[in-house]
Length: 181
Image (cartoon, rainbow, N blue to C red; front, side):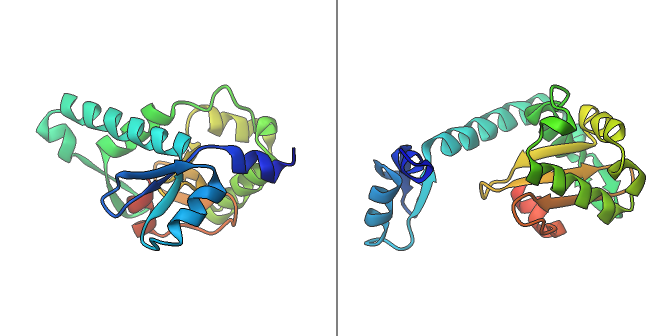
């Protein structure tokens, strides 16, 4: 079985305009179904479950915070963020401490290095030990956006850079808020 055939056999779901499950099947079956309803979307079942888990845990996390904690903001790279959103994402996605730079796939490595260079951290980009330190302390994180694309997100005390791993395209501030916070 080829890789394309294996991907096609994974379960997918068609969501209607109200985000309700409309149809369930292989990717090709769902693509055929969506041709009749162009505004419907296809999602992989696993990704949908991940999104629902994220939203459930986020809502539980926010309920535990006081009003003041929910409204507290931090400045990063002259941009304001809700501290609770950043803290939750770090908690939810967990530490990448079990990963080393060498364990990342080549495209993830490339994205890490490109993001570091965008921020001017050439010294970190050139030393595997430094990269591993930044991965372990969550300065560098790899996350999946709401649009199902993976990103490398570097968040220091004063700067940030977020790149799509597949294209190395930098996310705008608006995209970061929409896709990750």
